[in-house]
Image (cartoon, rainbow, N blue to C red; front, side, top):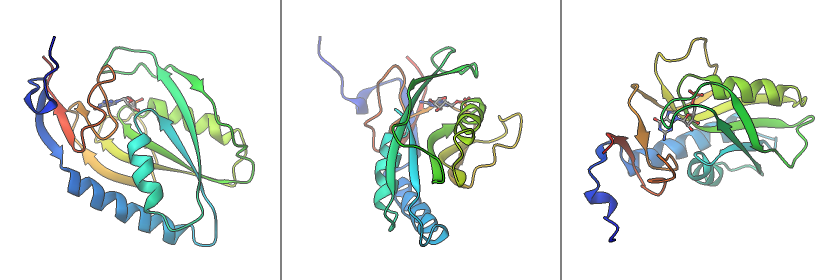
Length: 182
Ligand code: 5GP
């Protein structure tokens, strides 16, 4: 069976954030982090898989000797909703003790995944712990998610592209696109 190009895919709706706007915003956040962490070497903790593309662009926009580590988590729930019950699939390799840690997240929806990660990493005694989320869905969090760096505020629609998937598809789209289903 032939595979259709993503441009012809009916499950994809309109572009929510085009590639150039994503790239400009990521560069601006990189500058902010460079200024805020002057004289320090922050450790970027990327949350796989969704944040991999954002993390890669963000790291190149930071003019400091950053280090990387990754965590993979899986949240129980349906394909497009999380239940807040999070399981660590891949843990960090680097010790967080005394480090300036920045959690790099793709998207914060209910905020349950992030709340879990923050609690988990705080127990490892970092010198500081901040969050950088590319996308924040407005009004869906039960408590203030306390995110230091936010790329874009979005309405409650489900989006794909720039690392974000549905069933492992669409991560390679360079823009952020609304997913309307088939
Ligand atoms: P939360 O725990 O904040 O409700 O959900 C966070 C996780 O749900 C994200 O890391 C991401 O994996 C997934 N998620 C939430 N909203 C979206 C969305 O609009 N698109 C995609 N592809 N994943 C989402």
